[in-house]
Image 1 (tube, rainbow over the protein chains, first blue to last red):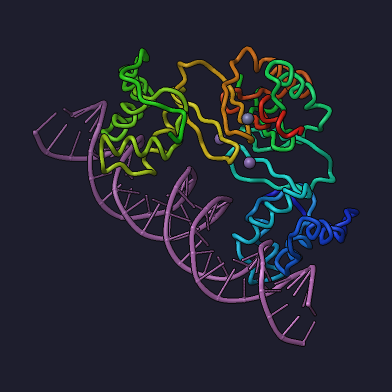
Image 2: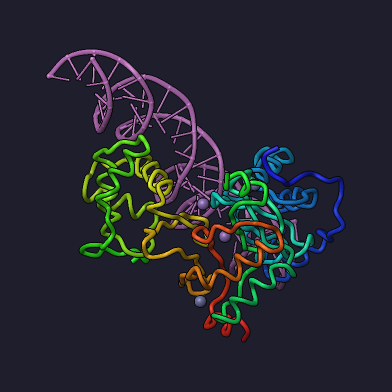
Length: 155
Length: 155
DNA sequence: GAAGCAGATGCGAGACGTTGCAATATCAGG
DNA sequence: CCTGATATTGCAACGTCTCGCATCTGCTTC
Ligand SMILES: [Mn+2]
Ligand SMILES: [Mn+2]
Ligand SMILES: [Zn+2]
Ligand SMILES: [Zn+2]
C-alpha cells in the first residue's frame, strides 16, 4: 500500500524510442535514466517520487534522489510523464499513455479518482471562456468530499 | 517581493473574538498564537508559511516554525484562515474575510488570480452533478497559461 | 493562590524536493 | 580509439513541512 501505483509485468508503451527522443533534444542516455525508465515502464497508475526512488533503488541501490527528480523533469519535458499534487501538495507522477486526466481527492477518506479529459472539458471551457485561461488538465487536482463522506459530514 | 501578501496598517476583521472562539473549543490562548494572529491581522492577500514565520520572528524572534504551522492548522480549523497550494505544491495561506475563492496560477509568467466563489460555481456544480463530489473551493488551485502567455506559446 | 488536567510548545529528527558546484561520463568528430 | 564540448551525476546544504515526545503552561477548581 501507500500509493496507487503498481507493478505490472510489461507495458505497451514504446519506451525504447525514448533514447532517440532524448538524443533528438541533445540530451544523453545514461544508466541512471535507463533505470528510471525501466521502473516507469513497469509502473501503472500514480506514484510518488519517494516510491519511484525506492523502486529505482531495488534495480540500482546507488540511486540518488536528486538524479531521479531531475530525470523526471526531463521526461516530463518530453511529455512521457506528468505530475500533479495530492491534497497535501506532494507530487504524484503518472505515465501519460493512460490518457490525459485530472484528479479528484477526497479529504474525508483519502480516495482518489481520475477525471477523464472529456469530463474536465466543462471546467476547461469555463475558464477559457471567462478568462482566456488555458487549464493544464494533467496538473489539475481538486479536493473536497466524495459522496459517501459528505453524507457523514452532513450528520 | 516574494509573495503577494502584504502588510496593511489595520484590518476590519474582528480578531479580538478569536480568543473566545479558541476557548469555546477548549483551546488555549498563548503568546505564540497571539503573535501569529497579530501578524495575520496585518496581512493582506496570500502568504506562504515561510513568510508568516519570518513576520512572526520580527515580532518575536524566538518564533518556532512547527508552532506556527500547528497554529495555522488550528486557525484553519476555526475557519479563520485557509490554504491552497501553488503550482509547486507549496502552501499559500489567506485570511478568509476576503471571501471564499479559488486560485489560478499561470505557469508561464507566475501570475496568480483569485477565482471568486460565484465564478467557481460552474466547476463546483459540474462535479457535484456528475459525481456528487463536494469541491472545496478554498483549496482549489488551477494551473495553466494565462491569455498573454498562451499567445506567446502558440508562436 | 496552590494544584492538576489537558493542551501547547520546543526541539530534534525525518520526509520530500530543489539547487549549486565540482567531478564525470556521454557522444560526435577526427 | 583519442579528444573535446557539454550534459549529467553525486554530494552536500538548504527550504518547507510534519511528527513524536518530554517539558511546560493556560485555565479551571477549590
Ligand atoms: Mn492542502
Ligand atoms: Mn506541480
Ligand atoms: Zn471520501
Ligand atoms: Zn502568464
